[in-house]
Image 1 (cartoon, rainbow, N blue to C red):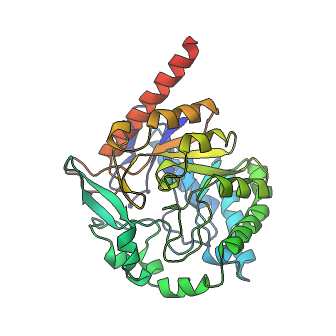
Image 2 (cartoon, rainbow, N blue to C red):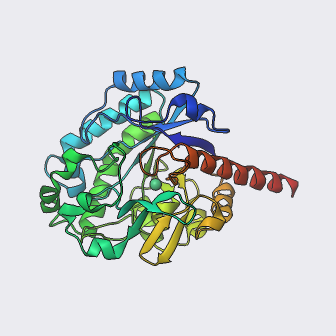
Image 3 (cartoon, helix red, strand yellow):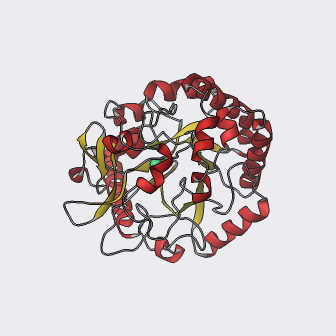
Length: 357
Ligand SMILES: [Mn+2]
């Protein structure tokens, strides 16, 4: 396991590489070329400049989150082959710059959905939260305007304003795409990119849908153990793997996270670890990482990852906003640094107790 930290790049993040470097045990960053659009081919020059900037600060790029997949690929439209070619160019640029893990998602229209960006918590912090009752009462076109809380001037990844202007057209694009079609479009995409992943040893890590069920009637496929195995078996190449995101896959309380992890040896290429507190099956908020603050047993999650020999990058996921920090909701420095320290502590304890046996 290699502890990492998400960083949005020069000019896009309030947190500096120098700050990240001082979090004990953090070896590098998970980042992206923030100025590119989905479907655009990344150049090696741009990746090289990003890499150099990160390495100058004594860190490294542990992986990319995300190289976004164009909607024409997800919806299976005729232009998809051109966009897949561009995706292959982006992977080539990354491979040549020694980047070997790429996170992506295959969610139509909305990358992730929350109904509150700054819900006050019992401890006076604010957190991201979800309530299905709110989703059921609004129109998807009003989704962005309906989210309570302030982005503090940051553009939220997956919620770029230029993209959200076209929500109606995006829904139109997916009107004939059901879950079967979406899965087959994903398999088509994966089969096309596996050769370049083999060539440069790039691990593709699909992010689970968040929340792990259909919202606004849109199809969702990376939602449970059976679907994950179906996707992995359909393209049975070790480079075809997943991002084990506890906070996303865990939104569905039927998903037994340690059990799912134990069934995915060799296919988890990236881990997002965080905790949730549930108020009902469809209402939750993002707790501190500590087991006692939420619903998940973080020790069992980390132990399962340890036991399957997980050796990819891990990052603390969304944190609470604490200590008066002004930051992108979920992506402040302080609580994610606490999360990294806690997860590193669990890992060290598991590792040492294993070697005693
Ligand atoms: Mn995640």
